[in-house]
Image 1 (cartoon, rainbow, N blue to C red):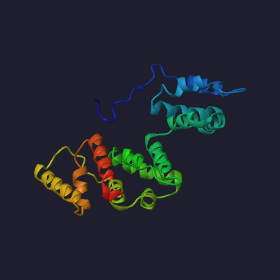
Image 2: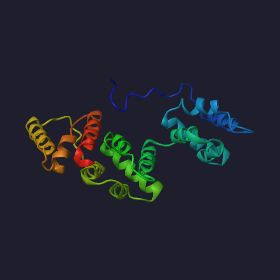
Image 3: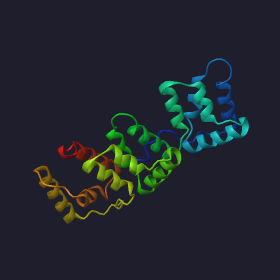
Image 4: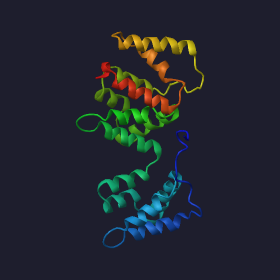
Length: 220
């Protein structure tokens, strides 16, 4: 199985010509109705970097924001997907986190999926994008929507200080395992032990551990 971050199937379009893509998108939105197939053909077959160039060129050529024009043409889930394609990775993650905490209830799995699978640098970029786009502090919003040990672990991940090395302290791992077993028997789990258990591991494993911890009874 390919590593996280290397599983994408969208590669740079060969012979990419930003002007042609801009003209095709303009044509797709002219007149009555929208040529959705053309929108998909252009945006779904370009990398994030290429889509950012298309956005810039569209604004320079048309004098309008591509996102705004597409909002006026599309609806429903298709609109959400297309607009998501136009976002950079940190902006999209911030958008998903915001949606996970909007309204009644919280989508805990979405919080875990993002925060437990991003590097420290990516976490810092996400928090900056969240403040810029929503004028809110991500940590404060998570504090308000979660509680208990689950809250503490997410806030800990937001500090972007997780050990990203591949070095494993076997002796400490045994100690942390004993703490987790003791916790399941009614003991109190300390955050330091959790931080150690989440550090120095692959992002896939990290996400799995966070999900397992969330399902434990003391998070319910």
